[in-house]
Length: 217
Image (tube, rainbow, N blue to C red; front, top):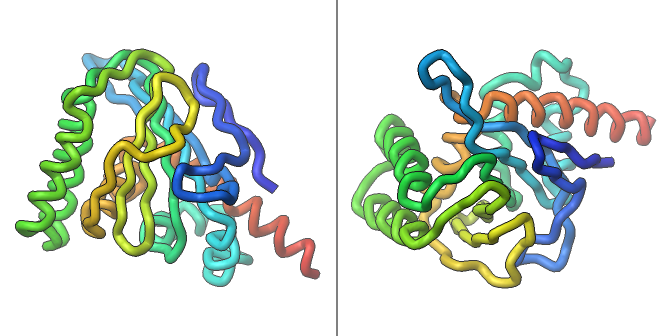
């Protein structure tokens, strides 16, 4: 079903096994994250989102039969963010970023989103501190990777690698549902850091579910 995707020099295999699981997760989509700086699009990271197998049936129950254009909607992306299945996110650096520099932008975007929907309180403030602390001694040269595991119960697991190798154990685990969802929201939500990732998810899931539908006819 799933196929590998290459973004810049980064290859995202079709299936990976997260530290928390013995089962492979499939690649939902991948794309570059960048910013327009003085008129030039500067690429910083390549992001891929993997999902556990049951995500396909759950999303299929809501989206099978929809047109490709209908998949490119905020509701579809929010269904991925809030769906009752695990997501495993790989963010591989295209250019050098130090941990505090990288986490500052991610945490700012996450806090802004939580404040906008009224989910930011004392627990979330503490969770953001834990999140920032996990990155404080990290450095990400090109090819280095941060991994995020987002569970439907609200766990956010973090792990790091100097290449694309998935560590056996997670570096930090933060229990806060609002933050866990906000991190993914900043990537593929209403104001995404990676429109290319969103487009990849929409295109690939339309094909996944069309293919799945043809098998059952």
